[in-house]
Structure formats: C-alpha cells, structure tokens
Length: 402
Ligand code: AMP
Image (cartoon, rainbow, N blue to C red):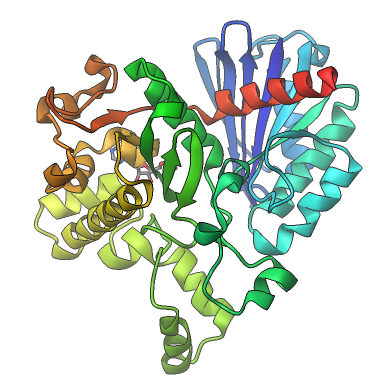
C-alpha cells in the first residue's frame, strides 16, 4: 500500500510517497517559493535527485506537478496514480475538535476552516492542499493528521491561561500545543529503544528545529507543552521569540510607532536566534559565528539552551520526576553542542551525558546518557512523513471497523 503525505505551507509543499509494507520512503520532495517569479522543485526518488527552477503559480499547479513527477517514467516511482491508496495531510490546527487523525469530509473541512484564524499562516494552505488533492484524487481516502491532536490530553490546569475565563468560552483561547505527531512518535520510539512501555515512563521530548517545542509526556499522554494558543509561545526558535513579557508588545508598538500586527511580525519573523544573533536563524551559521568570537551569536545559543533547560526542570516538576529526555528535529538531532549545554548542570535531576556518545548518537542506538545516568537521554530522529502515513492508515482502518 502506498500513501502520499502532503504538507502544504503558505509558499511551499513538502511531500513523500511511502510504501507501508516496508515503511520505506519511495520519493520525497519539496516545492518552494510558490507564486514567486522562480519556484524551486526538488525530488529524491530511486537514488536520484532532481532540481528544477520553474514558475509554479499556486498550490494546484504545484500538486499537479508532484503527481506528474511521481509517475514520470524516467524520474518517477509509480506507473499510475491509481497506485496511491490514500493521502495523509498534515494540518496544523485542529483546535479541541480533534483528538486524533480523521478521514476528511466536508464537515471536517469546515472545522479546519473554523480554526484558520488561530493558525492563519498554516491552516489556509493546509486547506488549499486538501481541496486540490481531493479533486485530483477523488476516489481514495484523504486523512487529516493534526499537530494539535496529541496534546488534547492536557489537563485544564495546563491548558487554561490565567486571563478572564470568558475568553476561553467565547474564543477558545487556551493552550493547544503543536508538533504533536513528532512528540508522540519520538516518545514512543524512545520507549521502544529502551525496551520499556511508554505507560511506565515520564518522558520530556525536546523538538528543536526551525520551530521548537518541549512536551511532558506522562506515561504516554501529553500533559503539558511549551507552544500554546499559537506556535509563538515557549522556547526561542529560529525567528520566533518564544515566551516574553506580554507588555513588551505594547511598549515596542508605542516607542517604534508600529501596529500590533507589525510587532507580531517582528516576534514571529525577526526574533529568536536570528533576532539575538543578528547572524542567521540557522544554528550552523550561528555556531560558526560564535566560534569566531561573535558574542551575540554565542549568547543566542546560550539563551536557547538556558530556556530549554528551564522547561526540562519545569516538566520534571509537573510529572513528579523524569525518566527519559529525548532530543529530535534539525537542532536536536544534529547540534551536539546545544544538547551538551542544555544538559549541563542537570546532574541533580539524574541527567548525565556521555560526551563521546553525544557526539555520535547513531553508534549508540541514540542513547547519549552515561552508563550510570538515572535519566536516559536519547536522540531520536523524527520521521514526520512516516508518522503521518501511519496515522493515515490507522484512521482508515478505524473508519473501516466502525
Ligand atoms: P527542522 O525544522 O527540523 O528541519 O530543523 C531545521 C533547523 O535545524 C535549521 O534551521 C538549523 O538551525 C538546524 N540544523 C539542521 N542541520 C543541522 C546541523 N547539522 N547542525 C546544527 N543545526 C542543524
């Protein structure tokens, strides 16, 4: 069975075609700069990589191109699109209506639309992808896999903000949390690697990529997570500030004579690692600058590590202890120096890294904590495409059984 996984952003589309029997990615690609003068189309399939620079007008154009290239006799991996059995769509915001993945029908589409104001950068392009692909591939099931669903187990005490209760009732202002598919997968995978059941472990998962979030997974259930009402809350990210005093928003608006929208643009796109370092949003570039003596680059990495460390402490308190810490995503999987800084000084919690292991996690099946460390620390590569495909399959099986 082959499942197509689609992740539509505002000007990009990421996709993978997976063979579910072998859990293998047959093709993987990315379209960027949709709607601009030159768009970029890249695909990796059957050991070959192609890159085309061409104008791609909109999501429909991009998705047609993807289907064509998947069945292209020279660069494709299928003979006909009827070989695709289902499509799994990543949807960022499912609010409190979805506790799991679901087969998409008109009602589901309306609910996703309802949450668009809460994720204006994500839900509208997610919906565009759903609408186009449902019309191009009408005979197969389409499944929505929500970033928010895994966090629906959070208790009230974690998801309610201490603001007037009526705003929760009237507008649904509460913590939702994101990266749920990744937190769920890496927590389960870490337990599997350790030969334990997730039901007996208190796990803190650190998804550190372009977006960063930390989750407390208490015996298999998300009980708190650092991203909130939107993906702006929590630890600092590539360009997002994470937690700040809300009064700063009004202050900047007044002293810089900006609108609220402009200030939020700054907090979303010009803050975080980029804002502090002034170098880049990419940890590789920042590390290079820090190594050559750039203080702002150095402090940007320090702030990231310091704030992740604070969340680890907080979530250990929330769960009454911690058994496992997991690092994943671009920074979490690759930047050993960030992992070191985060874990430094956490020996009192039972966390001790083995620096040799930390530099080469793959050699140690991902386990980077020292032999005697009470808390196990792991690097688990997140495979969002595989998780979305698996959830798609599960949703179809559930629907068939009901
Ligand atoms: P993701 O959103 O998971 O794709 O993560 C992207 C981010 O991971 C990039 O912006 C970089 O900051 C970081 N990253 C990716 N590869 C590396 C690497 N080899 N070393 C350090 N950071 C990396």
